Structures are given as structure tokens and as C-alpha cells.
Image 1 (cartoon, rainbow, N blue to C red):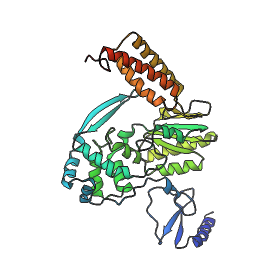
Image 2 (image 1 turned 90 degrees about the horizontal axis):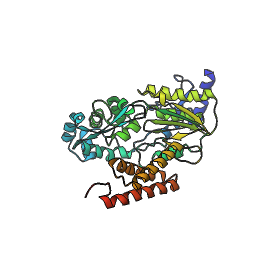
Image 3 (image 1 turned 45 degrees about the vertical axis):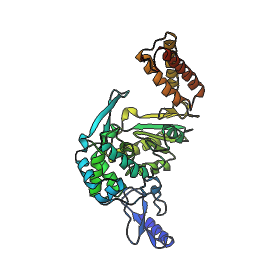
Image 4 (image 1 turned 180 degrees about the horizontal axis):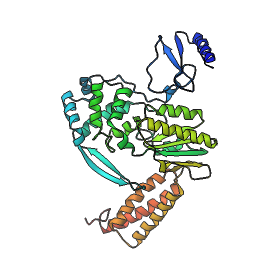
Length: 380
């Protein structure tokens, strides 16, 4: 077998011209790697076997600008003095305040952090002048301009099977080592610049959820393994996407159970290799005819809100209507009106009739409340 493959490589070499093919026996199945000027190019992820072309490049994250190699150049890029960047970086971990917390359905608490000035202003410039220039591949949807939970669901619309996975404690699991490697390997910045940027974008050794730079850095955290996942799943006839820590895999055809298991093992193995862990209780496998939800939207046929969310929205609207009839403008009713106004805006895209009914109830509640006091029931 090896003799045949070596002969195949020598034959392919005739057609490549000045580029030759290197046969890599270190990874099974056999892959081809492009050899230019008798040297192998640097590669952080495993290439595919497509006649010497690294098709995996199509799934990689790209930074189209020149790398920043000195602190002075970083200061010019951000419009700040190098001494200011170094001083703020040294005490960055103490420049955060707790912005809030959210209790998740599984009982765990998610804490949000907000940076204080001047760290917050520096993070805004890092996002606008560096991170916003990154070209993200089409399988990433969280926190990227022009992409949303709706576009993520539309990406998988009409699928016949769905595999849903979740990354456990995603933001706390993104350590300073992950962030340093992002600046160093993805952007190609020097070690000195990467260290300063790592200090400016992390808190106590981890990525703070809520900081302006965190959404983009969380998308970049799996830069080394994710292109390989996408390539291998594409070979199985499956589509992969990630919305922050939510991973969804779909296919337009049915697969045997061992193929489903193989796809799941590949995702788990890549996560472990990158230093993360899957959240096994969030693992879910469904097929057409069942409830198939991606980022809390049904993808079985036309994209829509799940039946439970539609029912909850209608029940809450009925409750607000009863509050309005009884002229109950308590803080509980006011909070419910605010929540319904937001949820009706989300439902408008998928269920316009339901959204119009909810908005009319909210409008009626606000109109009656206005005669009593101001919009939210406070005495003027």
C-alpha cells in the first residue's frame, strides 16, 4: 500500500510543476501536504487529502492585515502611548466590576463583567481596530456583525437530523494560554505584543464574559481544531456551526447510528484536544418529525419559535391583559410588560399575527398606566 501511495505521489509531482507533494505517514488516513521550494509550509491544523491543496484553508479564520511586532506599533494602531498600554495591562485584572448575573436552567450562575475606564476604552479600540477586521468562516455566528441566532438557524433549515452539543463553562475555560495563542498564532503578533494584549483582554487568568473583546476572542478560541472538525464532518455529509458555546451538527439525509456516534466522537475529541469539555447533559439528538431547535428556533421546515415559547408568550399576554383590566400597575406587571414588548419583537419575524396581538395588549396596558402616572407606573 505504501509503495502504491509513494508511486502516486511521484506521478502527481509531474503535474504540480515547481511544487511537489509530500506524503505524510504520521496521520491516518493518508493526507497530502503541499511542499514549496523543498520545504513544508507551517500549518497549525491537519490538511485534507485533495491533490496537494489545503482545502481546510477555506474553513480557517483569517486576519488580512500586517502583524503587529512591537509595542510602539501597537500604540500607533490603537492611538495610544506604549507606556499607557503597559501600565493599564499590569493592573487590568483589578479594573473590572460585576455587571450582573444570570441563573441558567441547570442551576449554575453566569456572571457578567464590565471593564472600568481606561481599560474599557482600550478594549473598545482593540475590538474596532483589530478584532473587527478578522474574516470569520461561515460556520461561526455568535457576536459577529451581520450574523445572529436567526442566521444560525437558517443555516441548518430543512435538516433531517440534528446533533446538539454544548461546551461546559466556556468563558471560564478560555485561559490566558488560549488568548495568548490567539494573538500569537492567529494574528501573528510578536510575543511581547501578545502578552500585553492578553493582559488587556483577560481577568484573573480567564476570559471575562461581558467585556467588549470577549465575543470575538471566544469565536477564536477553537481556531486550531475547528477547521478540521468542519472538514471531517463535511466528508460525512454533515454541516457544522457554533454560536458561542452552542454546537449544532445537521444533515439533509439519514445516517446509520455508527456515523452519528463517529461525528460526536470527533467533536468531543477536538474539544478535549483544545482544552475544553463537552456538557454531556446538553447532548441531544433529534430527527425530522421531532422538535429540532437551533439557538431556540425550530428548523424542522419553516423557521419558527418552539411551541412551548409560543404558548408561554400567549399565556403571559393573557396575564398582562388581566392586569390591565384590573388596573394593576404593580412592579410585577410593569416588568411583565417590558418582557412582552421585547419578546413580541422577536416573534414578529416568525409569527407576525401573534406578535401583533401581544403588542396591542402591551400598548393598551401602557396607555392605561399613562393616565395613572408615567409610562412605567411611577408617580410623576
